[in-house]
View 1 (spheres, one colour):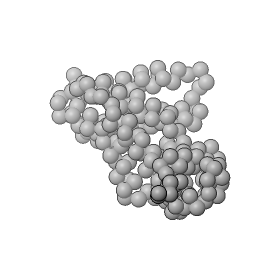
View 2: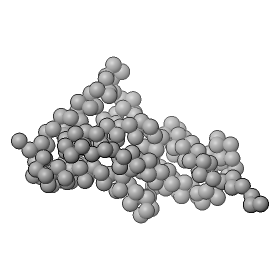
View 3: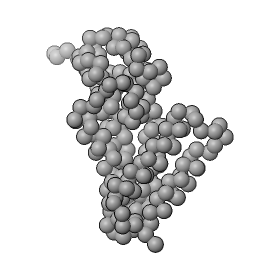
View 4: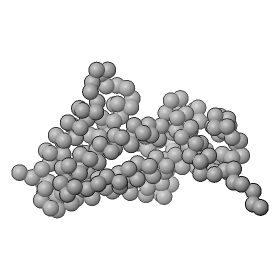
Length: 197
């Protein structure tokens, strides 16, 4: 009878989530493999077995964040209305950030000084944003959006959602600010502003 695997996917995900929490709440100096193992109720051997080294762990965090984010973005149902589809992607962007705030900082900031994701991890990052580029390109090609470079619309949309989500996650918005409603209003104003008249 084969020995049961103790270093399984469930442990890998638990370690990644805890590593992300340590980074987002206490900073890069708090992320030691010994502390991570203790917090997750496992051994440092398990951490090394699953990830190899601390840089490999951070790369796995980056990749996992984009894996989850990309899956959510790809699951957004398209309506054929470029403005509505752009808004839907923006709403899912925020939902994804709020679902995994501990991964967001690794994905989009320099949470770990000197960290450089591998080519494979960078590919995951690009693929995660592909639905945004596709919706915009389709909107321009179908004549729903202004005839501008799709990258201009896509990057400005990304900048808007990233900025608003970052303000929300960092707790820098006014306490009485209706984030969800205001966020969607901003998305609709931005997307509608690109509509060809």
